[in-house]
Length: 104
Image 1 (cartoon, rainbow, N blue to C red):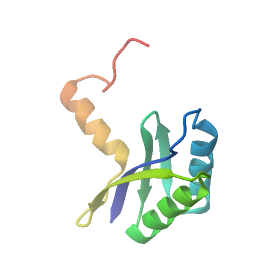
Image 2 (cartoon, rainbow, N blue to C red):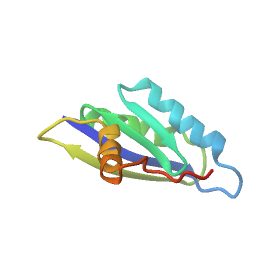
Image 3 (cartoon, rainbow, N blue to C red):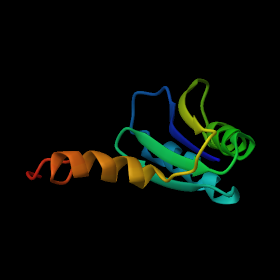
Image 4 (tube, rainbow, N blue to C red):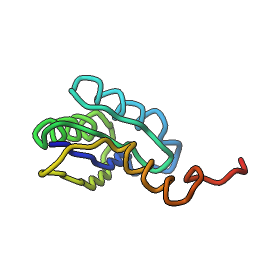
């Protein structure tokens, strides 16, 4: 089984969230998950939902603040395994090009 999730953890504050988001991402290192952070969140891959939920909980708990907003979207493939990168590769194969703009 492969579980893929999009996790977004952020304090509800007016200033930059970067240092608090970094704490959440760093907390993932203690778990058996693969992850990649992007501008909208962090994609996490785990073998079990138990490991995924534990990692997400740790990331949430790592953020300081009176109010913390956490969003977790899960794709739990129970009948087969696959990596998150395979999802992107499938879309790129259909497009015939990378799934991103060419301008920076």
